[in-house]
Amino acid sequence: MHRFRPASAALLLLAAASAAADEPKPEWTMSPPLFRLAKNNSDDPAILLDPCAVKHDGKWHLFAGGPAGVMYYPFDDTTPDGPVVRGRKTSAVGLAVPQVYYHRASKKWHMVGQQSYKDGEGKTRVAPVLSVADKVDDPDGWSKPARMEIAQPLDEKEKLIGWMDFYVIFDGDKAHLFATSGGRLWRSETKATDFPQGWSKPVVALKGNIVYASHTYRQETAKGPRFITTITSSGPDPATKMGRQFQASYVADKLDGEWKPEAVKPDAPFVGFGNAAIADPRWSRHIVHGEPLREGSDERMVLEAEPARFVFHARAKLKDAEGATAIDCVGLLDRSKK
Image 1 (spheres, one colour):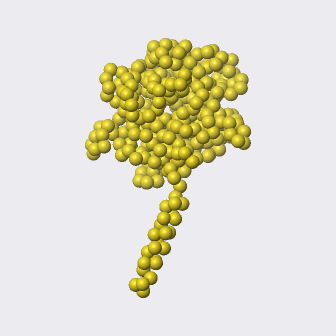
Image 2 (spheres, one colour):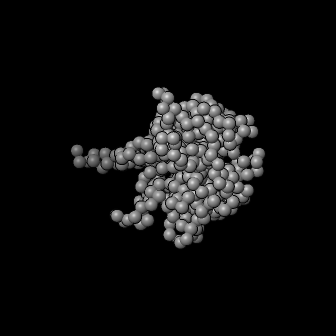
Image 3 (cartoon, rainbow, N blue to C red):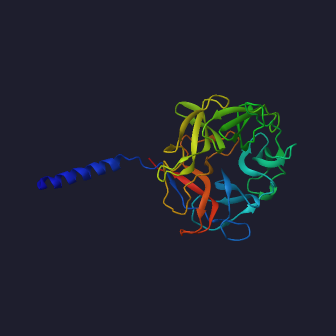
């Protein structure tokens, strides 16, 4: 019996090596927290939420919510290390959850977002708003946010539903607005020439594992054009089995068509801990709110078939130590090269 043990051990080692080789490699690699994005009045890391980044003139322009309002950060590259970049508060006072793009028809930069207000019953609601600017890199040039007049969505019992995280995409002669509420993705539309007003009654575009924050794009694929939306979902982290937020994706042939799940499971997400390598223990293992980075910047929201980077926010410790202070901050994911 003893003489067969070395052979058995060798077989076991070969089997283990074969299994390891068959394991899929992570599709995304997560950066360290971008603590280089600092407050406006010091080099201390800023608290940043709901990031949006556009590329223009070879530079990245990142907008994110913070305690002082929407902050603006320009930088040449998206590496986590490098010189400290102090944020500058934009003049879009009261706006939150920014989406920024260049509107070709008006030759203006648009910042779509949300703003809180009190309804007739004194309840706090949020409404979509629009701020415009001549230059993307002038944080003082954004106009006072103007409200987009859209009827608030109703549930099956005709009761008002709160919604949030508004996102606009133009296609042909129409503009479409998407927003989320618990378990629902809503859509409204208007003529491109009537934008930012003239909106239709919101309809349910999709029901599913939806927490918030959809981001919708047009993609040109080998099979033709399609639309994709990434949405914050929740489920068990495959590694820890604890509930975590990740990014799911749904696809459709047209914006007002049927949306079908593409990558929606915690262990097989669009971006999440089922397919991302996370080497920095300071991260909280959430991917709370984010979007793929696209090379274009206009209102058609054209996204590459396989975007190479994804910007997000999550909580991270300032130091890798038990009890260290954690803040909301921005991070990046890089798609692994095949």
